[in-house]
Amino acid sequence: MLIEYRSSGGFAGLEFSCFLDTDRMSREDAQEWFSLVEVSGLMRLPPSKQSEHSRSRAVDLRTLSITF
Image: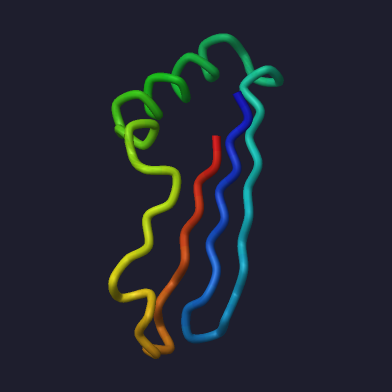
């Protein structure tokens, strides 16, 4: 499983991203990620969820994206 995490925005407008590939991990670490994803319920959410606050002009808002 490939996992991509992106965070952007905030007061400074910084961007951060992280990519994980369970095929390149130990079996134990990969199983932990599979378990965390299952328990989180993220796979049961709609493909895209936009917060009502995302339309706000607040300078400290952050955008998070997790892609599986």
